Length: 265
Ligand code: KIV
Ligand code: NA
Image (cartoon, rainbow, N blue to C red; front, side, top):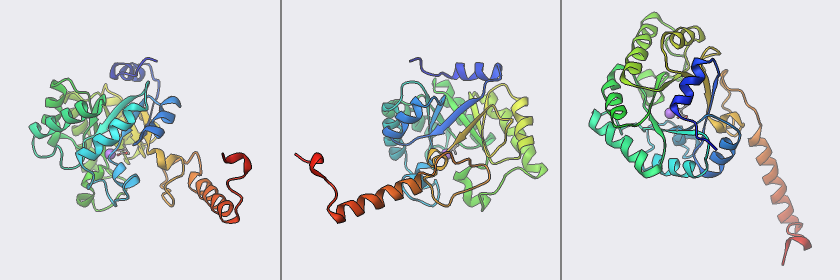
């Protein structure tokens, strides 16, 4: 199978074909998501919440991201695999950012990295791209800055923040990003910026005009109980299905009904 490339993603935007992206954090999920036909798998730092149970994305480490990324890579043949640089691994300076990106590429076998932010990280993006590493940007709601924002509500509703986003997206495109995630911004702002740049935009809670869409896989299969923001479409109700399966198993074991004669040696 031919692996999706950043060039293929650019061609998809050019001919108006939408890009489908999902997260994955482990081998088993990456395999089923890859075979399902997504174009990009994101090893998101949402692993901090979804896999490790932290309240925010801040605690996850570079070593932990590399472990998740290497597992995901082993489960894929088709999707382009992009890995989040975690909080604290790139904000210091562009040399630190480059070193972190190189570690991810060498130690996991991933195909590119994602960084949150605009003008303030443009130099780091330039340096990573100059080393031959594809970089995806991330603007709008950037969860690594949650303690600056204070809430996970929609970003860039006010003129000043919308203007900053328009400037930031031009700057990170110029720095060499091959694509950019837009998280939780008004659909019409996402439309305007998607049309103002060449590279594809991938939205989450950013409306129908983005060049592609991304969701956290555990959310879209209904495994994260009680998380139901407006932008989330749940394609399965896995939490309740697994809960039911576990209850049946416990019942069978307690009743002596598992294993039966055919299930033993
Ligand atoms: O970490 C993550 O899952 C992400 C996506 C929501 C874009 O950054
Ligand atoms: Na992320």
